[in-house]
Length: 512
Ligand code: GLU
Image 1: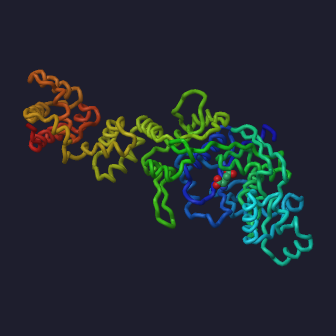
Image 2 (image 1 turned 60 degrees about the horizontal axis):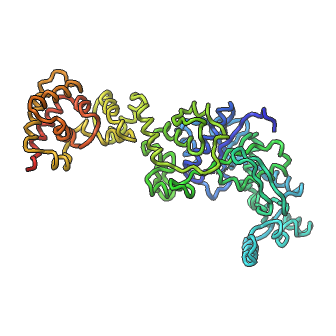
């Protein structure tokens, strides 16, 4: 392969359900690689297995990539020079390659019935041998290697059902270079004669995938580690089809692991530990079951993108915060790790908090308005942004700024029971009344004035203001903790604060 070959990568999901977050990371690494090398990002829908097709899955994939800001240059909706980009629409194109392989002696017809196949497996298992259709077991099966030419022809003329299998050599090392793992060597004795064309004339994944990668001039196959075992077969298909000099480079990405580190991250882990494993919410069209998504759970696209990029790839320095442009700039396959990347929920929260803190308030406004509407909180945009600005320091999700800050909109209906029990002295209400009066007389109701007023009150009364802070906070907000106290009061406003202080004095009876 010449070094000057244009970079063309593909993300090739099968539309069998919602796209797992690991799949999104595969798409992202492909995208970053394409962008970095001024290349082309292709979306190819691998839907040859119609039994596993799930309606809505393709749109879900598209929407997920769009949400995270990955553009597709060629794909089912975008079109392109190698359209169509859905394998079901290309199905007529694959069979000729299977027949070409038969002609050149690298594949064969197999007429075995399901019963005969299962008998073979049982026999091999009983003899403690590998239960596979391979270079040794194929010699006792019904295929064009064992049957006479006439018999094969008459079966074909009869329309007897058959599949086409690749013919692997008995013992041969298949070597290929993986951009992440280095040299990989697998012996064909460990492989089997996979079906490449099915009885209905449809290709299997292996044939369709290799043919399309070749036809679409794919330069790099960047995909999950679960496809590593298929790679030697793909290498042989390239070789047998005479395309070896145009074979793409392979890069198999590490798995996304459970937070504990053993095993692949699954939907069950997400349910168990309370985080989504899908980018967007998904409703199963058959069962109606809903799986949560990062978007609907309140994560920002930028945070998810940043978090995913670092699950399996390490920049050369310790930088953690990356915009898409910075990722494109820094991304290399050499810095993708070989070992699995553990999902880390705290880190996911950390990223979300970071982006929440750093996003301009105007950009957060539309989402904040939506949350306010859901919570039935009414106010002006400016006020809403001030609440978000004051509350965001303490929370992970934008929605929590309003959920935890309802008192910015409504008088409290309850007062923190522990503070009332522990901090309300017989004289507390008297102080609160006096402070309400002092506040009422203020012309300027800002944080500085409020602090000065309270200091002054403390000095006059020779009382420790510190001891009044929590009762004051609870009287105004109902909650024992929250954003900086004086800023909170200033934002809630004089009239409301004074009213709430007086109401609290009526409602709360001191202990002892
Ligand atoms: N259709 C395969 C999948 O669902 C594609 C694997 C590959 O990228 O070769 O992931």
